[in-house]
Length: 75
Image (cartoon, rainbow, N blue to C red; front, side):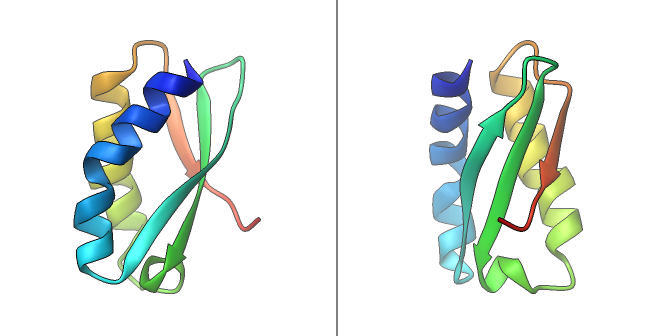
């Protein structure tokens, strides 16, 4: 499942990088929770939660069956 999540992240990474940000996979839990770290401009952007839900989470859930939720972590 982790490989599929990484592939999904690669598909959205150019959009994040265009705004000076990026995303890093921290881990995928057995329960289908994906933990990511938003970096660069995304790390402290007031719109980062919207980016996480509308962009990152939607792309991962669409591409990877079994993922239930995406959470941002600090570390």
